Length: 93
Image 1 (cartoon, rainbow, N blue to C red):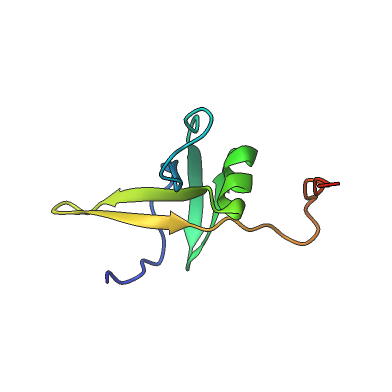
Image 2 (cartoon, rainbow, N blue to C red):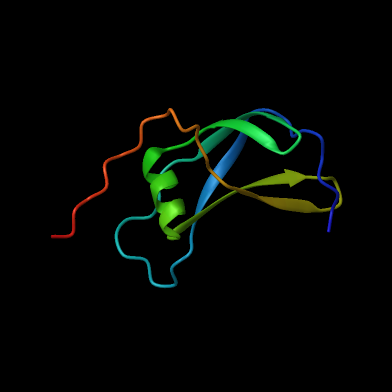
């Protein structure tokens, strides 16, 4: 496994990848943008529906780094601070 870099270049596209083998609904639109990273944490602009789908396990968020002789794929795990508003939980009743 490649060593974890101290930081990644800015303005990298974060792509949504469908996890389900049989997708229902439209293909995920657009990409996110990795703005800055430092020691494993980063700041990115992501579509809200991509983050929600990633938390449900329907999408995977990842980006690729071209290292010359090979391309490395890195997984993105979205998180937010406690004070950030969350979407209301939908009632099933």
